[in-house]
Structure formats: structure tokens, C-alpha cells
Length: 373
Image (cartoon, rainbow, N blue to C red; front, side):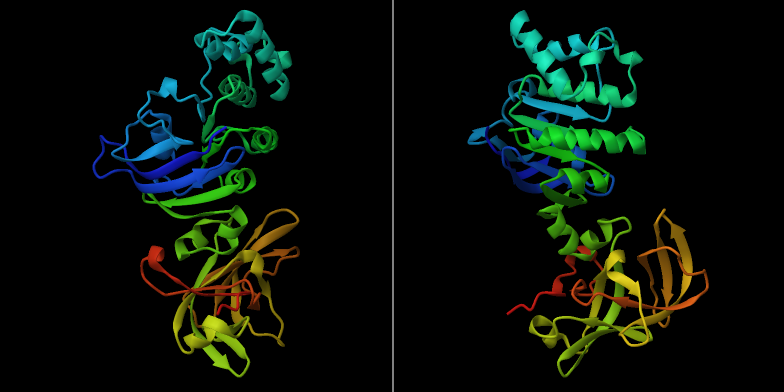
């Protein structure tokens, strides 16, 4: 199998200005790159450009050293599965799986063997004789995925493959898809609005905004070490808290003064020591905040709202003397609405950004847990 390489992708050619601009990425065989971003950020457009359903304005799409953007879709040896799970309604599941093999001139005997093998992988053996209209949404999605993979594609494209499934079924199908992708030798490019899908299925995570790729890397790196306030605030359920503050340095310690209190920042060396008295935007994830005690650096406030999520919940705290409300995650019981509390932060999990009005240009000034040069 060959890697997928996207270089300088801009397009499509019939839209001005282009919906995506200067997209470059590489997906190695056996790996999955998940693309996430707000609606209209260009995720599906990239899938369509790679598939050949739309034409490039500029750039190139390659499998290994072969440019496939100059080939018609039928010659690119790729599988595309989208949220519609489109199956041929007049064919049963087995005939749907066999259809792409028959179109490639593969004989009946080999077709039967490959359909049976693929149906075992996707747990469709008991459904081969059934028509699509008699299947559940999850079964239709599995059958559509099996039809895409039965001919052993060199490239797998997934465009919101589970968007129409309910939460419980989505979790089941996600687990099955993860198992399947782990054994797939071809590179996979996936577009999704669901961050759980992206974080759990992607070996790499690409974040898009307004047609541009603003950060790409392993999911946990992008999640915990965002390059901009946009990425910090977009990723996560909820996204990271973005709070205005000012850096204070004293002896061997550093704090971020926020409203009527402060959060400690660590380590108190490296880049942060050059930021004394500078205004910054602080990114802090809900799981890295806690209700603090009197003996630690914290910011006072009052509980504005609580959300019960089962065994734990989210607590929305309006910070005293600050413009922001922050959200923290904690186990039950949750504090009561209106209760006065103090919010502390994990000093090694904060990221400090330049406080620019455009979140895309909020350059990283310092990261908690990193000493720098």
C-alpha cells in the first residue's frame, strides 16, 4: 500500500473564492487521519477533492509517487463511505457487496469468496439475503462500509460515516469501525463533526477553520497542546476555557492574575519569566480545573449553573472581578447554584496565548509543564 499525500490543495475549481486553501497533509498506510472543524470549514470538500468528485484549482493528490488527481474517480482505486449509507435498493446485501467486484470483471467464484470474507469481518453473514429497506440504520451503515472495502481499496475515505446513527448505536459501530481500521493496510482519511469519533478513531487529527488546516498531529497532542485559542476552544466537550489574565513573577513562582484571584503557573522558568506583567489569554480545560481550598492559588466566584452528566457533572463558575465564566468537571455531589466557591487550576496544564482579537493568530507564549530554553 502507498501513502496518501495531499500537497497545496486548493479548490474546488468552480467556486470562487475556493472553499479550501493550501491544504497539505500525509497519511501513511494503515493509519487514519481525522479531519474536524465547524460546519463549513471544508472537511467534506477535502474528501470530495481527494475522491475526484470535485476538481482542484491548485495543488496535487498522490498515492505514493502517482498523481491521482488527474485520474477519473473510477480509476483511483478508493472506497468512499458517507453518511447516506447509500445501497442499491433493488439488490440484497450480498449483491450490494458483490456489485463493485462484478464491475471490475472479477469472476463469480472469487466474488463469492470475497463477499463471504467481508461479511464475516463486518458481521453481516446473517443479512446477506436481506434488502436494504429491511435493515436498521446501523446495519445499512455496516453494509455500505463492507461494500466499500470488499475490493481492497488503496485508499479509504469516510465522510461522516456515522452521522445518522443514534448515540447508543454510534458507540457500537464506532468500536467495530475502530477494529476494522486497525487491520486495514490502506491509508484512511475521515471527515467528521463528532469529536469523539475523531479522537478515538484518528491516529492523527487535523483541525480546519474557514478552509485552512490550522493544526495537525496526534489527537492527544492537539488536544492538550493547542497551537491557537481557536483549537483550544473548539476541541473538547466542553472546549477549553479561555480567560484573560496578567502574568506575575515572584521569586521562584509564577501566577496568572485573573479577576480577584490568581492561578499558579509551572514551571516558573523559561519563557514565562520573560512575560512579567504581560496580558495573556489562558486556556484551561474543564478537567484541569477544580474547586480549590484556602491554602492554594485560586480565583473566587459563584456557581452560575450545574449540569449533571451521570456520575460526574459540569460546574459553571462566574469568576469574581473577571468577565468570564469557566466550566470545570467534577464528581458528584455538585455544588448548589449560587454557592460561593474558589476555582484552582493544574499549573502544568495551562497554555498562555498572545491576547489577539483573532483566535487564529494567538501565538503560544508558554505552556505549563514545559520549561523551554
